[in-house]
Length: 132
Image (cartoon, rainbow, N blue to C red):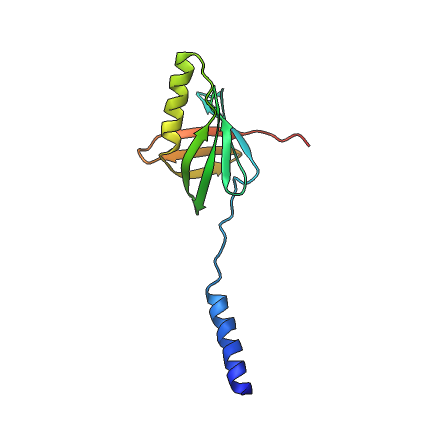
C-alpha cells in the first residue's frame, strides 16, 4: 500500500512539474503610453492592466481586453464612449480603431512602445511618466 501511495505521489509531482505553464513577462502591465507621430505627441493614449487596455482616442475613451504570447499581442473587440466631435477628429479616431484591432505584435525599447499591424504599419507611443 505504501508503494502505491508513493508511486501516485511521485507521478503527481512529476506530471505536475511538467504541466507548469510559464507566464509571459508582461512589460505593459500598469503602464500608460501616449501616441507620437513625427516626434510630436498626439492626443491618443493607451494603458494596460492585467487583462484590459483602455485609453483616449482623441474624441472618445475606449477599452477592451488583450492577450499576450511572447511579443505577440491581440486586442479583442473594443468598446468606446459615443461622444461626437469634429469630423476630422472622428475620422482619425475611426482610422486608429481600425488599425488597433489589426495589431499582431509589440516591442518596448527605452520606454517607447511600438505596436505593429498585420500589414506592416506601426503605431508608436512613449511611456507617460507616473507621478509618485
